[in-house]
Amino acid sequence: IDSDDGQPRLLRSGVLSKYLVEQGHDVTWFNSTFDHTHKIHREKKTTFRKINNLKLVLLRGYGYRKNISLMRFLDHSKLAFEFIKVSKKLKKPDIILCSMPPLELCAASIFYKNKNKVPVIFDIRDLWPDVFLTVFPKPIAKLFKFLFFWQYLLLKYSLENASALIGISPKYLEWADRINNSINEKYKKVIPLGYYFEECKSQE
Image 1: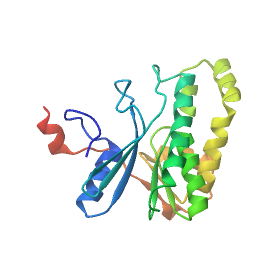
Image 2: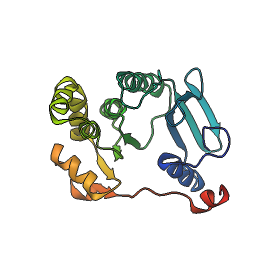
Image 3: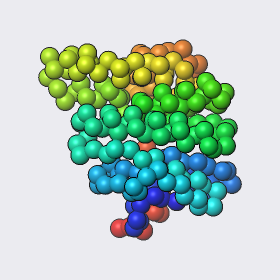
Image 4: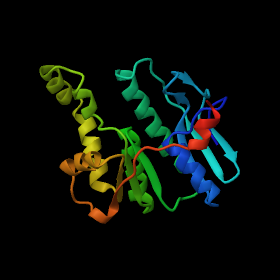
């Protein structure tokens, strides 16, 4: 059910989508047309693919050459607008699981939640945008936080309106709690990163 040529290893969303499909669930997996690892586009426009119980939606973004760049923020904004546009044409889901980051897509999923009364779970995989603060000297880090204040607004808005949270470690959930601790503990879960052992073994 992967979206790339060859035999790439399924990552977190792919693993979950594969598992749910195997259990007989109908899954819509949103991904980007842009391959973050190889910095190439999978498709020239937003594309729909159907594989058994899986509907794969590749959202067209701008792409970017560097992971730390203004273009990456613009790409994330484009993906959010594409999601809002495309989701209007699709059947309302029972639940949304959204990776965090990108924060723009997180905010777009909350917009959808509030409009359609659909629970949204955030899977926190990166301490975004705080991760950027670790690569800059303190004076520049403070300037970054000031200039990119809107990222922190998106983060706060998303966490304040989330239905539940998943973190790849306890520290990730603790980080989210420092921003917003209104979510009941029973709606928070740590699920570490994992992979299909047999799948990786076959690629050796």
